[in-house]
Image (cartoon, rainbow, N blue to C red):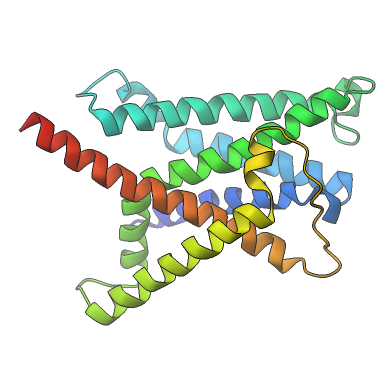
Length: 227
């Protein structure tokens, strides 16, 4: 695994961390929130520069169900990121205050709505690339052979993350937030800041895992249907 790919992987996971940090608005002051958001969009630009060749290959090759799903995921992510970018500028109070609109309560609601969808779609996008991520991790730690004990530990950890992710979806009212439904939950950062990040990280892990294994089943079904 090349050094550039390691840097890319690090930046991608940093972007996920920044999204979760941006969701912790009531833990941050507004300036920090906008700085993290700006850093996130810089990383998104960097990610697209690294993957610019992919856009030229979209119209090429065979479009099986997995590839169509991947294209739809990236298109959805691009739309959600665009909505989040435009609304962030329109409600900015610090970095881009000169471009902000007065009032803007509805725009804030749309901005929050887009933010939760960005997190979900990025988790799904991560799931479509999970095999690449795992191969990169094996290369990083010099793992070249199969090991039953290690496999059991890794899969046990994946199950634990999934279970915690399901719990976190309810605790954080994640489904309601994706539907732009008001919820009465308000995370107490004085009680636990780490818990907020762990909960959302587990939701990302849950969604990525579901996507990874769902695509495996989809590929199997596609091969069976076309064989």
